[in-house]
Image 1: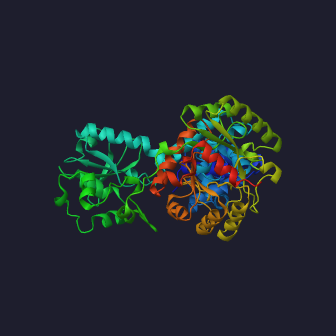
Image 2 (image 1 turned 120 degrees about the vertical axis):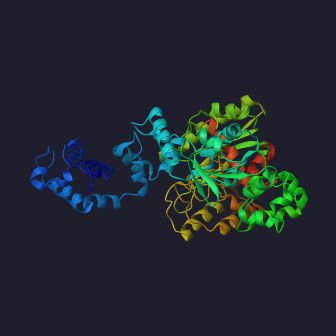
Image 3 (image 1 turned 90 degrees about the horizontal axis):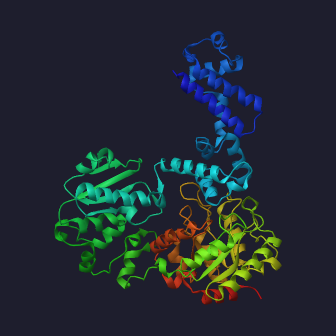
Length: 558
């Protein structure tokens, strides 16, 4: 039998869902009031008859009937109907503290937000601040609440756990009294999404870490210790005896198929006792393979490449310019001047400013008049920099539903770099979505295809695409493809980098920065690019300003 708190929660949810769907205010308030009355009733309402229920303040015949329905079956048809027509992600968002159904309705209708991840990304891009009733403080509070909610769903983006993982290793080293503690598995390979943190320690046991409260709720599964951190993150913990750390680190780091192929029949731990990880590679006749590259996925047996010599994987220092960044002209947090000066001070040689185009009304997209205003400011700033740094006039042009770009040709011609991206109508089938992007790629003004699938990791699947057709079209039209470095996206997926490179398509690793700190999301893109074997030679923004300018200029129609 449902208790008062459970029945009250059903009526509260019903009231919230009715508000979310725009039902009349007096109806939603009646259920809200009933929820409070039920919660505060001394006796168990599920055990009461209809006459007794109607004596409770705020409980009329219709609500009494619904209480009886809940008491009888544990369900309420009216509530079930509202749940059925509500996107699942909105049900999650109703639990976000400080949001509420009325505000959520506005976010849903005005910004198209339907999942926690989409809301978090909108906060990252400062879109909530553009709506009346949402300020910087409320946006930050909502963002923090959504982060908390996402962290407790059992799967995580790499960036969400990065700091906690580093702290965990430090704490384990201190508790176990050994430096031979390391991340391993997916976490060490910097996989974009993680189910848990995986660690390896050369120690007799994790007992001291359990006693210190570093690892909680321990249980044994498949011969390994599983536990949680203080924040609730799941940890899979490996142990090894003295002298086996190098072998076990190698064995547990790589994708299982990759590691099996590397070791072949030489997988007896005793044969490798006392060897460091790099020494094992040497003995096997392979160069040391960075952890993030130890994958075997579909057509990427990276091990086979090592036999020919490991490519010099791209490093953060190889990137010479920041491509794809937003300012206060659209939905960025920093002015054009502040962003340019920051990028310059961080040691980069150029900045490609790509605010949103006019159709992105939700992001304060630029009208043709405001494009001209921004270009005049870029000219003034470039004069001030006097050749020490260059700002390129760019735009992130929405790809319209038919594949067209978001300005007339005479406006597109004024940009030095056009990133063409999809931001709306994300639910096309594969054939239609592919045709849409093909038309955008074939547009002579397109320089870079932005975040191709539109995915938000763990929050929104990318729309289905024929990647091969798109990459082939980029090769034919001299268009680069973005690897959007924002850790919510990491799109193009790294598994398609080898095919793109084989077709001569350059990859542009772009932070999609909406704030000054957002510039540093570049590192997540670099980690993903390294997983796909990207080298500086195949990275568009590893070019210096002069070469990048030449590349952009030759792509523009005369």
